[in-house]
Amino acid sequence: MDKDCIFCKIINGEIPSTKVYEDDEFLAFMDINPAVRGHTLVIPKYHCRNILDTPENVGKNFYNVISKVSNAVKKAFNAEGIYVFQQNENAAGQEVFHSHVHIIPRYKGDEFGKYSPPRLKVEIPEIAKDGEKIRQSF
Ligand SMILES: [Zn+2]
Image (cartoon, rainbow, N blue to C red):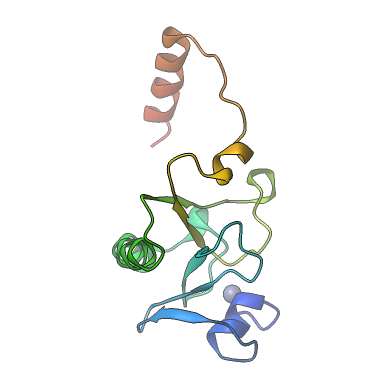
């Protein structure tokens, strides 16, 4: 718990939110500035900054909860797909420094896709080198 953290305040009820799922370890609630209708956030109740400092015991159930909430959002919004993303640190666009995952309902040809950044043109050997760099980083 961090007394200055907006998401910790949401967890302890100091700041109101629209909760959609809660268990002992996790909370899911509606994003107050949604990118699309149904934009939901999933957070661990344990305060950690992002995926880079999430303790193993906190992270191990995160995916299962994201899956559960994603299915609920998909059903709730009759979505054809679900876009899940997480930003880690400023350079990646993170604005609230309490680990959180975005769940976005998607539809074929929807407007949301227009805001995705353009893809880079990278040759296969370069991609292979990138893969090797990542493998060497574990
Ligand atoms: Zn927090």
